[in-house]
Length: 209
Image (tube, rainbow, N blue to C red; front, top):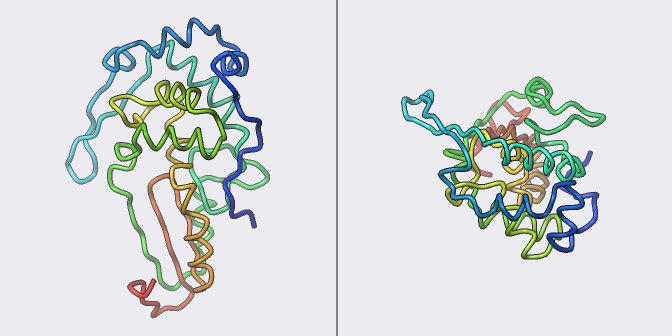
């Protein structure tokens, strides 16, 4: 079972290299990162299950184009751990909702946790950290990519790259959490912002975790 987040590609050295990888003119990238946040997306408010409102963003054409290239040229080179499910490409294993639920099909006790306002809490600083310390890119490239993927200093729900960033946001701590829970004979999965921990013990006390 794969328990690691791993980037299988090569580091991007500078903005010229980034433009080449994305197959986008460097001047188009430089133009995009100068656009004000209010001009990057259209947005609308929708009601959440609890009655609160949340903002959903639709990237303008230039950002949709660039984010699609980031998704297809960079994020497709990620090897995902088997406990992460959601909006990530299937490899030899499915990563959909059904496959996620099947990991807990023999459970006798289940704990479900929803990470509140998950996308809003993925800051631009964290996205820069992901590009710098997970992908191994330089500081300038990481800042540019974070600017291209974020709005108002956070990951926008609805952006082309947003679900990938949400899926990898916990990369620095999730493997150790999974392994620690495994020693307690617990099964851990995350479907974007929904965490499920289960036990085959009917009387398991999750407060003991």
